[in-house]
Image (cartoon, rainbow, N blue to C red; front, side, top):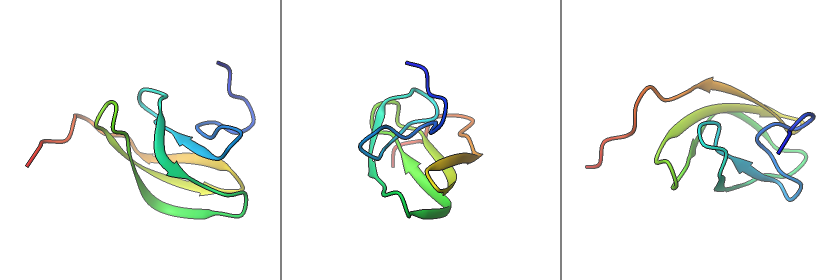
Length: 70
């Protein structure tokens, strides 16, 4: 799947994981603005910090390793 205009966001507004590309449990709208928002992926168990404005996502911090379970 090639994503050109809106990387990491599909047509319905679901955010996709920057690491594995799977759909996360976070849904956004067209007018949503996020700063340092943590997106957690249940599939690969990684958390990434993103910034988003006008459906354009910029990855602030990508995880170095998987989160440790508590």
